[in-house]
Image (cartoon, rainbow, N blue to C red; front, side, top):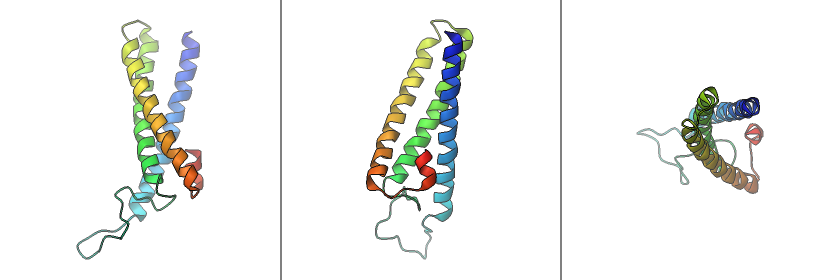
Length: 129
């Protein structure tokens, strides 16, 4: 059972690292090409603090929650590695609880991804996310 759990844990870890990589690219692009706000600039009429120059209105929420899910997912992979290494009943609750939180955040990000798909204006790189 340990080899199967280790393989699934490794695949899960890789998935979350890919999500973090694409999400980091999107956040970097949003910071570099977002609104420039200073003392001499007016806020745009439809200003949003979660503004992304690519995609649609749901993109900012999708990327934000996908990044949160990715970070918690990597933490759950680390807790899972600890559990596989020790393989005791005492290490299972911490690994399972962090995995449950990562799973719910992933479902929340998936909901925003569905909304982004529904609005039909998407970035090609974010489709992979």
